[in-house]
Image (cartoon, rainbow, N blue to C red; front, side):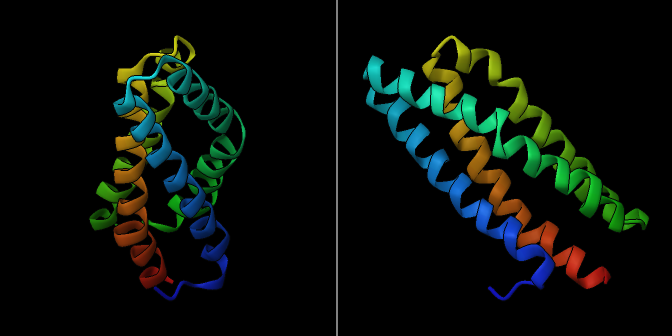
Length: 126
């Protein structure tokens, strides 16, 4: 999918996020405590690092571009999903397999939403 140049770095980060999400899902489903712990730590580090800055970029730079009322559900969904992912942090710190699987599933759905709905809406509004 061809992207506007200013969205390319975020789209590339989405690829990294999808890879992490899939690893988290697989680890949670495997049931191996060591793998779950390692994957939870990876997710915690991602949330504290590149995902935190990714979310901030989207919230501070992209979402303000969506001004009309018809676009507000996209803004609200983006913010809600960012909160959902951050709220899983406590469970990830406990190495909870359910939280890990939820993180993976939520991240995959979120990235797909942004790539298929949010980014095209932003591109169309410019």
